[in-house]
Image (tube, rainbow, N blue to C red; front, top):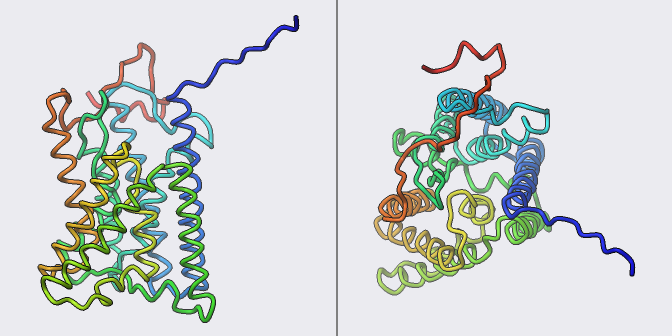
Length: 324
């Protein structure tokens, strides 16, 4: 009989990591393309310096925090090794930075963009809870950075929703949102597996519009109108579905999406502006508090523990930066 060749199956952790990286790469390509098209063709009104300042801040903050953490925990640098490793390490910072540069508007001032980006990246190292024996951040980084800057500086706002299709006419007004929906659906079904969360969020958004119409006399069409904008589509497929800060289970996704929609409706009933961003931040905070209070979670707000290695872990030119 012919011998059967048996190949080892990849470990679940390796498969999950590969899927995560594939998703991050595609998300990064998509948001980069949208920013380039926005500043050249679509009609973005923000300065060209917005994405440059955000990226410079995001990259430097991510690298600095990694050096400090690796030095404190005596472990290898996560970005050290090869150019691909370095690029993959910066993918989350790249996505977060461009999202903030695209959605936040501070007129001619660039420092609110830098501040929001630094807050977003820094929140991943500060606001952490224990999940399945590991510590993970629970705040959506870009959304938290935007929300906090909006709260601290009332003169900062969100970019005008019309800018995403300002220079498009006719079929172009439909093709761009359709492309975002198609690509976002593919990414979230194939890589992040957050389609149930999207469905729950959309259903809850429609339901809160109906309830506000019945209870408070809010016209139904204006209450549903945000769903027709490109900004809403981007929020739905590229922000609320962040796999690092949302539940993985079906039940958890349904509850999370419905909670964001319900919180948005409550904020709108209280006449609070920028409701989508604040709603997502509040739900992430509540989820983080719930995870923190779980008796099965022995760890609290802390950096992940990594076994120390015997040999030097930092390159020589970084040895002076070690923490004692």
